[in-house]
Length: 386
Image (cartoon, rainbow, N blue to C red):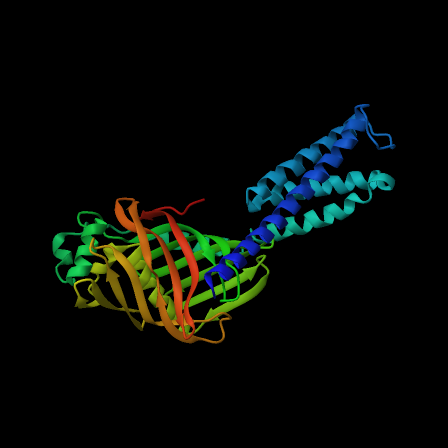
C-alpha cells in the first residue's frame, strides 16, 4: 500500500474513532444538562418544564446530572469502569422520566444509548473477559517463588561475539537473571493491507521457569471495545480476539500457532529480556561480525531467527522464517517475519530498544502491521498490578 494512502486510511479511522467518542461524550453531557432543568424547576428558577417538582425530587434530578457528568468524564478518559456511574444514573434518570413522562419521555432514547455503552463496558469487566483471564493467569504464575542469581561474565563466554556484545551493551552482567518480566506497550496495529491502523495499549508478562507468555491488547473501533489475548502456556498457544467481550472474532490455535508463538517468545527474549539469551538451550551460530543466528526450542517446537546488530552492538532487527500469518485463526501462511528496532534507552537498569515494529514479507512487498513504543519494563516482579 502506498505510504500516502496508508496514512490517509489511518487518519480517517482516527477521525471516525474520535468523532464516535466525542458524540457519545456530548450525548451524556447534554443528557446531564437536561436533568439540571428538573433541579432548576424545583428551586423555582427559570425552567421550561411545567410539571411541579418538589425540592427533594429536584435534588435527585441534580444528583443524576452529576452522575452523568462523572460518567462522561471517565468515558472521555477511556476508563472502561465508567459504567459504575452510568448505570445508576440511567436507573435514576428513567425513574424520574416516568414521573414526568409527558415532558421528559424523549430522554428514554438517550438512556437506551447510554445503557448500551455501559453494558458493553460491564461485559468487558466480567470474570470471563480477557483482562480478568489474563490477571488470573499472571497471579497463578507469580505465586511461584525462586531466587535469581546474578549473571556473570563467564555466562556469556559461549555466545557468538555480536550476541555477547549486545548483552554487554544491554547491561545484563552483574544483574539478576530474569525469572519473569512485565512490559507495557502502546502503538497501532492493522489486520490487513487494506485496513487502517488502530491504536492499542498492551501489557504482557513473560515467565521462564517454565516458559510462558501472556499478552493482552486493549483497543476500540468506532467506540466499541475489543480485546485480544495471546496465551502460550505449557505446550499450547492461543490467540483470541473478542469484540465488546462478547463476540468471538478470532480463535487461533493448533500446531502453526504453537510454532508462531515460539518465535514470538524467542523474539521477546531477544528484545525485552536479553539476559535470558545465556540459556544453553539456545544454539547459536555466528554469521558475521554483525549477524548471528539463534535456534530456540520450547515445548517440542524448534524455531530459528537471524539477529542483526549495528556498530554500537545494539539489536536492530530480528528475522525469522518460522512464523505463520493468520487473520482468521483458520488458514495459515508461512512468511518471513521481522521486527525492526531502535531508539534505545534504559529500562529498569537494562538498555533496550524503546521503539519497534512488526512486518510480514509478502510477494507484493513488506506489510508493516504493527508499530509500538515500549513504555515500561519491570523484571522479576512479585505481584500482579491491580
